[in-house]
Image (cartoon, rainbow, N blue to C red; front, side, top):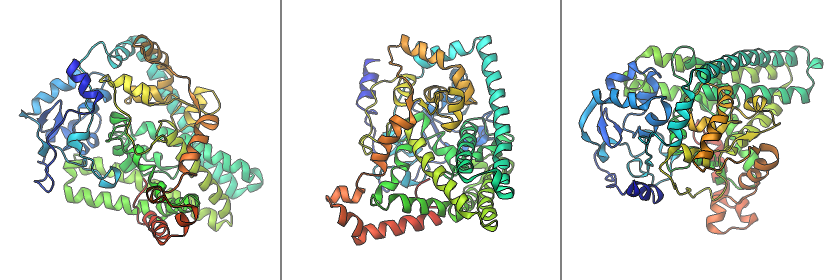
Length: 489
């Protein structure tokens, strides 16, 4: 135990580096607790959906198994049927997790940089919380809260289309300020649902509805289901956590150009960029093999259909307002939604302090680490309303400790359990942070007012930061990248 704690405090135990230019990763290998498995035959059988197994090939899935399952011990017994009977080697792990390399730092190596946690201690925080949640009364309450959450979401979808219909058909009934506020609230709320949908089993209509994660113009749920669910949650604040890298990409831009250039970049994503990415995912799926990634075309088409529909919906809304002569109403809600949502996403963790540094992991208790590294957010102070206003992040610590839970209301219902067990473990339970008065000012200073990375590295002043040819080239490339579906999310 002592040796393992020392390993976690100082980072992962030294491993042989992945040989530069060496042989590619072996096919059909998954790594769990240092051993090699071939889960190919399990892809289409996985109760959580084929996507999660297919996407994690050539990765270390130890933290994913331990955190995303109510009973990981049963999963471990099942895995033994697929054991290759040998320890894992560097060739079993893709150095960039089979994900786009730009999501990680240049020297990132998954074999060496994926953190190690223990999930075999039955007295740790995660096991104690799960044991209490298995009590019949709590199980029934969680299911009830999930149903209420889904009913509220259905009403929000109706309101989403009604507000736009009123503005287009009877603008006097939907004044501009009301329209802009309503659209931000509804988009954020439905993205909150999409946030939980990508954590649910990717089966049935969930594979279609999870694309509502796209409605605030930030992401492409088709690929973020991997980046967020599998490369952020199990590896929070580590080198594998892509969330801390993706949203600092705008820091390449000169500070006075940052808002307009990033806004145009995201408009490019909306107009053509994300459509190109959808086509690219389909192309890659055909090239790699649909059975390898989704189990079969039926599983894949549900994801592709949902994503394509939402992309058409977002562009169609813009076109409808343009035809109606009300384009600037649409543009205003686009800008407001885009920027508030951007700050909401990074408000739930402390990414702004020394954004290039990774906090040292000081515990091998995964649950304790998640409580310490995630913030609960409040917008108006009511957790049930804030659950939607914050895109699902009001009970964020519960969401990180129990990422498999299906709704924000379920997380609110179990928050007391986590808080009580955290206190027993000696973990401080800090009050929820106000998005408006606490997080937003700090985020604005970091993401909007700080010098560009290039200016920081070369110690440029304000004038050179903005007028140098390199600054213009960076800005032009950033805009072009948006229309091509490159960079950002």
